[in-house]
Length: 228
Ligand SMILES: Nc1ncnc2c1ncn2[C@@H]1O[C@H](COP(=O)(O)OP(=O)(O)O)[C@@H](O)[C@H]1O
Ligand SMILES: [Mg+2]
Image (tube, rainbow, N blue to C red; front, side):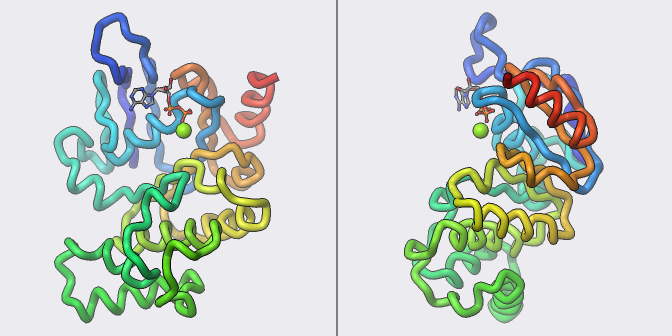
Protein backbone atom coordinates (compact mmCIF):
# COMPACT_ATOMS: atom_id res chain seq x y z
CA UNK A 1 0.00 0.00 0.00
CA UNK A 2 1.26 3.44 -0.98
CA UNK A 3 0.37 6.29 1.36
CA UNK A 4 1.08 9.91 0.52
CA UNK A 5 0.27 12.11 3.50
CA UNK A 6 0.01 15.90 3.36
CA UNK A 7 2.82 16.21 0.85
CA UNK A 8 3.97 19.60 -0.33
CA UNK A 9 7.17 19.61 -2.31
CA UNK A 10 9.46 22.44 -3.35
CA UNK A 11 12.68 21.76 -5.22
CA UNK A 12 13.77 25.23 -4.17
CA UNK A 13 13.65 25.37 -0.39
CA UNK A 14 13.19 29.11 -0.08
CA UNK A 15 9.90 29.72 1.76
CA UNK A 16 8.24 31.60 -1.09
CA UNK A 17 9.32 29.22 -3.83
CA UNK A 18 6.45 27.67 -5.75
CA UNK A 19 5.31 24.26 -4.60
CA UNK A 20 5.63 21.64 -7.33
CA UNK A 21 3.18 19.50 -5.36
CA UNK A 22 0.80 21.07 -2.85
CA UNK A 23 -1.23 19.33 -0.13
CA UNK A 24 -1.31 15.95 -1.81
CA UNK A 25 -2.81 13.14 0.25
CA UNK A 26 -3.74 9.82 -1.29
CA UNK A 27 -3.73 6.14 -0.36
CA UNK A 28 -3.28 3.69 -3.18
CA UNK A 29 -3.86 -0.03 -2.88
CA UNK A 30 -5.43 -0.82 -6.26
CA UNK A 31 -3.46 -2.90 -8.74
CA UNK A 32 -3.72 -0.48 -11.66
CA UNK A 33 -3.44 3.23 -11.02
CA UNK A 34 -3.06 5.84 -13.75
CA UNK A 35 -1.68 9.36 -13.36
CA UNK A 36 -2.50 12.10 -15.86
CA UNK A 37 -2.06 15.86 -16.07
CA UNK A 38 -0.60 18.62 -18.23
CA UNK A 39 3.16 19.09 -18.65
CA UNK A 40 4.59 20.52 -15.46
CA UNK A 41 1.59 19.50 -13.32
CA UNK A 42 3.78 17.43 -10.98
CA UNK A 43 3.25 13.89 -12.31
CA UNK A 44 6.93 12.91 -12.45
CA UNK A 45 7.54 14.40 -9.02
CA UNK A 46 4.61 12.38 -7.67
CA UNK A 47 5.91 9.20 -9.37
CA UNK A 48 9.40 9.77 -7.93
CA UNK A 49 8.01 10.23 -4.44
CA UNK A 50 6.82 6.64 -4.48
CA UNK A 51 10.30 5.10 -4.72
CA UNK A 52 12.08 7.80 -2.78
CA UNK A 53 13.86 9.34 -5.78
CA UNK A 54 12.24 12.51 -4.45
CA UNK A 55 11.81 12.92 -0.69
CA UNK A 56 9.05 15.43 0.08
CA UNK A 57 9.98 18.73 1.71
CA UNK A 58 6.82 18.44 3.84
CA UNK A 59 4.65 15.45 4.64
CA UNK A 60 5.41 11.78 4.34
CA UNK A 61 5.28 8.95 1.83
CA UNK A 62 5.17 5.34 2.97
CA UNK A 63 5.11 2.07 1.09
CA UNK A 64 3.84 -0.86 3.14
CA UNK A 65 4.42 1.26 6.22
CA UNK A 66 8.05 2.07 5.36
CA UNK A 67 8.86 5.75 5.06
CA UNK A 68 10.68 6.72 1.85
CA UNK A 69 12.79 9.22 3.77
CA UNK A 70 14.03 6.70 6.35
CA UNK A 71 14.02 3.40 4.45
CA UNK A 72 15.24 4.37 0.99
CA UNK A 73 17.03 1.11 0.32
CA UNK A 74 14.10 -1.15 1.24
CA UNK A 75 11.74 1.09 -0.69
CA UNK A 76 13.82 0.86 -3.85
CA UNK A 77 13.79 -2.94 -3.54
CA UNK A 78 10.02 -2.92 -3.39
CA UNK A 79 9.33 -0.21 -5.93
CA UNK A 80 10.78 -0.48 -9.42
CA UNK A 81 10.94 2.65 -11.56
CA UNK A 82 10.82 2.94 -15.36
CA UNK A 83 11.82 6.20 -17.01
CA UNK A 84 10.43 7.68 -20.22
CA UNK A 85 13.72 7.30 -22.05
CA UNK A 86 15.05 3.73 -21.82
CA UNK A 87 18.50 5.01 -22.82
CA UNK A 88 18.63 6.68 -19.41
CA UNK A 89 18.33 3.23 -17.84
CA UNK A 90 20.22 0.88 -20.15
CA UNK A 91 23.82 0.67 -19.05
CA UNK A 92 25.46 -2.49 -20.32
CA UNK A 93 26.55 -3.38 -23.88
CA UNK A 94 24.28 -6.39 -24.42
CA UNK A 95 20.72 -7.25 -23.48
CA UNK A 96 21.65 -10.12 -21.16
CA UNK A 97 24.43 -8.14 -19.47
CA UNK A 98 22.10 -5.22 -18.90
CA UNK A 99 19.45 -7.35 -17.18
CA UNK A 100 22.15 -9.18 -15.19
CA UNK A 101 23.61 -5.85 -14.07
CA UNK A 102 20.40 -5.19 -12.12
CA UNK A 103 21.17 -8.18 -9.93
CA UNK A 104 24.76 -7.19 -9.21
CA UNK A 105 24.06 -6.21 -5.63
CA UNK A 106 21.26 -8.74 -5.05
CA UNK A 107 23.39 -11.25 -3.14
CA UNK A 108 22.14 -14.08 -5.40
CA UNK A 109 24.65 -16.75 -6.45
CA UNK A 110 25.75 -16.38 -10.06
CA UNK A 111 23.81 -19.53 -10.94
CA UNK A 112 20.57 -18.23 -9.37
CA UNK A 113 21.10 -14.80 -10.93
CA UNK A 114 21.63 -16.34 -14.39
CA UNK A 115 18.47 -18.41 -13.95
CA UNK A 116 16.50 -15.31 -12.97
CA UNK A 117 17.88 -13.36 -15.97
CA UNK A 118 17.04 -16.18 -18.39
CA UNK A 119 13.51 -16.38 -16.99
CA UNK A 120 12.86 -12.68 -17.51
CA UNK A 121 14.39 -12.63 -21.01
CA UNK A 122 12.15 -15.55 -21.92
CA UNK A 123 9.05 -13.91 -20.49
CA UNK A 124 9.67 -10.75 -22.53
CA UNK A 125 10.58 -12.55 -25.76
CA UNK A 126 14.12 -11.19 -25.46
CA UNK A 127 15.97 -14.53 -25.42
CA UNK A 128 16.79 -14.30 -29.14
CA UNK A 129 18.23 -10.84 -28.51
CA UNK A 130 20.24 -11.83 -25.40
CA UNK A 131 23.62 -11.13 -27.01
CA UNK A 132 22.39 -8.25 -29.15
CA UNK A 133 23.97 -4.80 -28.55
CA UNK A 134 21.55 -2.91 -26.30
CA UNK A 135 22.04 0.40 -28.09
CA UNK A 136 21.02 -1.14 -31.44
CA UNK A 137 17.58 -2.26 -30.23
CA UNK A 138 14.44 -0.54 -31.52
CA UNK A 139 12.69 1.94 -29.22
CA UNK A 140 10.07 -0.63 -28.25
CA UNK A 141 12.69 -3.31 -27.58
CA UNK A 142 14.71 -0.84 -25.48
CA UNK A 143 11.68 -0.06 -23.34
CA UNK A 144 11.06 -3.81 -22.92
CA UNK A 145 14.68 -4.28 -21.86
CA UNK A 146 14.46 -1.40 -19.38
CA UNK A 147 11.31 -2.95 -17.91
CA UNK A 148 12.92 -6.42 -17.80
CA UNK A 149 15.90 -4.96 -15.93
CA UNK A 150 13.50 -3.49 -13.36
CA UNK A 151 11.38 -6.64 -12.99
CA UNK A 152 14.32 -9.00 -12.61
CA UNK A 153 14.82 -7.48 -9.15
CA UNK A 154 11.36 -8.74 -8.27
CA UNK A 155 9.71 -5.54 -7.04
CA UNK A 156 6.15 -5.53 -5.65
CA UNK A 157 5.25 -2.24 -7.31
CA UNK A 158 6.27 -0.83 -10.68
CA UNK A 159 6.10 2.92 -11.24
CA UNK A 160 6.34 3.95 -14.88
CA UNK A 161 6.81 7.56 -15.94
CA UNK A 162 5.48 7.96 -19.49
CA UNK A 163 7.04 4.72 -20.75
CA UNK A 164 5.38 5.04 -24.17
CA UNK A 165 5.86 8.74 -24.87
CA UNK A 166 8.84 8.11 -27.17
CA UNK A 167 7.27 5.13 -28.92
CA UNK A 168 5.22 4.78 -32.09
CA UNK A 169 1.65 3.47 -32.01
CA UNK A 170 2.59 -0.18 -32.51
CA UNK A 171 5.19 -0.20 -29.75
CA UNK A 172 2.87 1.78 -27.46
CA UNK A 173 0.28 -0.98 -27.89
CA UNK A 174 2.91 -3.65 -27.33
CA UNK A 175 4.14 -2.04 -24.09
CA UNK A 176 0.49 -1.44 -23.08
CA UNK A 177 -0.17 -5.17 -23.43
CA UNK A 178 2.94 -6.03 -21.44
CA UNK A 179 1.83 -3.66 -18.66
CA UNK A 180 -1.68 -5.15 -18.72
CA UNK A 181 -0.19 -8.61 -18.21
CA UNK A 182 2.01 -7.71 -15.24
CA UNK A 183 0.99 -9.29 -11.95
CA UNK A 184 2.50 -6.33 -10.06
CA UNK A 185 0.84 -3.24 -8.68
CA UNK A 186 1.44 -0.61 -11.39
CA UNK A 187 1.41 3.18 -11.18
CA UNK A 188 1.47 4.46 -14.75
CA UNK A 189 1.99 8.12 -15.66
CA UNK A 190 0.91 8.57 -19.25
CA UNK A 191 -0.47 10.80 -21.97
CA UNK A 192 -1.67 7.71 -23.84
CA UNK A 193 -5.07 7.76 -22.18
CA UNK A 194 -6.28 4.61 -23.97
CA UNK A 195 -3.80 2.60 -21.87
CA UNK A 196 -5.83 3.50 -18.77
CA UNK A 197 -9.28 2.32 -19.85
CA UNK A 198 -9.16 -0.88 -17.83
CA UNK A 199 -7.36 0.63 -14.85
CA UNK A 200 -8.87 0.60 -11.37
CA UNK A 201 -8.31 4.25 -10.64
CA UNK A 202 -6.92 7.43 -12.24
CA UNK A 203 -5.39 10.46 -10.49
CA UNK A 204 -5.54 13.82 -12.24
CA UNK A 205 -2.93 16.46 -11.40
CA UNK A 206 -3.21 20.13 -12.22
CA UNK A 207 -0.63 22.72 -11.19
CA UNK A 208 0.74 20.51 -8.42
CA UNK A 209 -2.61 19.57 -6.97
CA UNK A 210 -4.46 16.31 -7.08
CA UNK A 211 -7.72 17.60 -8.55
CA UNK A 212 -9.55 14.36 -9.29
CA UNK A 213 -9.28 10.81 -8.08
CA UNK A 214 -11.82 8.58 -9.74
CA UNK A 215 -12.61 5.64 -12.01
CA UNK A 216 -10.90 6.03 -15.42
CA UNK A 217 -13.90 7.28 -17.39
CA UNK A 218 -14.84 10.07 -14.99
CA UNK A 219 -11.24 11.04 -14.23
CA UNK A 220 -10.21 11.17 -17.89
CA UNK A 221 -13.32 13.19 -18.76
CA UNK A 222 -12.32 15.67 -16.08
CA UNK A 223 -8.76 15.83 -17.43
CA UNK A 224 -9.96 16.39 -21.00
CA UNK A 225 -12.27 19.18 -19.80
CA UNK A 226 -9.34 20.81 -17.98
CA UNK A 227 -7.27 20.69 -21.15
CA UNK A 228 -9.82 22.33 -23.45
N1 LIG B 1 14.78 18.50 -10.19
C1 LIG B 1 14.04 19.59 -10.31
N2 LIG B 1 14.50 20.81 -9.85
C2 LIG B 1 13.75 21.92 -9.97
N3 LIG B 1 12.51 21.94 -10.51
C3 LIG B 1 12.00 20.80 -10.96
C4 LIG B 1 12.73 19.56 -10.89
N4 LIG B 1 11.95 18.58 -11.42
C5 LIG B 1 10.80 19.17 -11.79
N5 LIG B 1 10.82 20.49 -11.52
C6 LIG B 1 9.71 21.44 -11.76
O1 LIG B 1 8.57 20.94 -11.11
C7 LIG B 1 7.40 21.16 -11.87
C8 LIG B 1 6.67 19.85 -12.04
O2 LIG B 1 7.50 18.98 -12.79
P1 LIG B 1 7.18 17.46 -13.08
O3 LIG B 1 6.87 16.77 -11.81
O4 LIG B 1 8.30 16.95 -13.90
O5 LIG B 1 5.84 17.58 -13.93
P2 LIG B 1 5.25 16.64 -15.09
O6 LIG B 1 5.89 15.31 -14.98
O7 LIG B 1 3.78 16.64 -14.82
O8 LIG B 1 5.56 17.32 -16.39
C9 LIG B 1 7.85 21.80 -13.17
O9 LIG B 1 7.63 23.18 -13.05
C10 LIG B 1 9.31 21.48 -13.23
O10 LIG B 1 10.01 22.48 -13.93
MG1 LIG C 1 6.98 14.16 -16.32
